[in-house]
Image 1: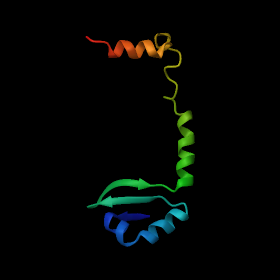
Image 2: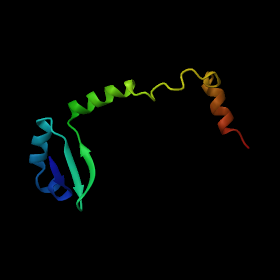
Image 3: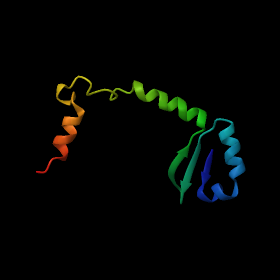
Image 4: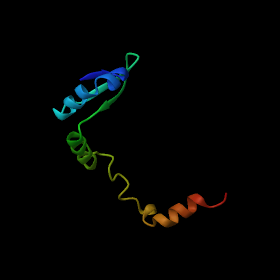
Length: 79
């Protein structure tokens, strides 16, 4: 479903109905896409896929980051 900012005020019941039907709602402001509202059930499924992203855990083999407290201390020390 597509909705403008004005539709958020005037047609909220239609937007809520679309979300109940598991449809994402794309919000437009002055004709430009500003964001997408996903139904809560779909948002949970999207978050579950983050762990399978190739960048997840990309530094797990770095030996210099084993002691996190020491790394943070070295970043915070006075120069």
